[in-house]
Image (cartoon, rainbow, N blue to C red):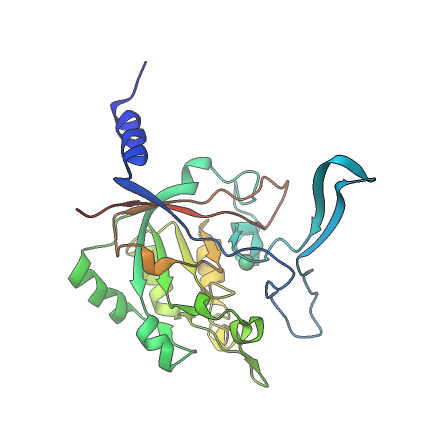
Length: 262
Ligand code: MN
């Protein structure tokens, strides 16, 4: 049995008619960890420890141990990550339905606004303007917020913390409800360290993207990069997290299939 669809996909991948764009940041000890207020628990930063490298510890092989929090570097948020999603079915990294992990992406370019305002909040009006130009967001799409935030290679600039806490862009309360209730998106992705804005604790509810997205069984992707290489619509992303039992999220590789425009 063969599938014409898969045959043509393979042919297009081979010919380059569809190219693969890597939306993943490289994990390293320099990867900026999420920092919470000191009274909260903290996640481990990424650590790499060599086991052997063609030496007396292992003459023919090289390998490492690594450790990090689930929410480190480019990573996936499962619904159980937030208290609003704690009792949903299939809410963990090992039970998320695989068909939810490949899907179409809409990319909303906010980079111009973020360049002058790191606290920029995506609004319904901004999304409606995008739709007037590019068409309505299809149900079960991923919404990826392009901000060019991932161009900040210095970890401190990437975290962008001052005495008020972190300053990074994200969605406002109304747009998240709109994207769920009116557009039925399956996930929200960001180039910044969280799907919510750095100052999202001051919104009501606090961290609305986490609260509403995970409370309705949807997903998050953070620390994406290369979003400027994607068209506003027409790409497909592949984003399976590690299959950690009862996991709340995990680092992952996010790939996008992008049609080459002729
Ligand atoms: Mn996370």
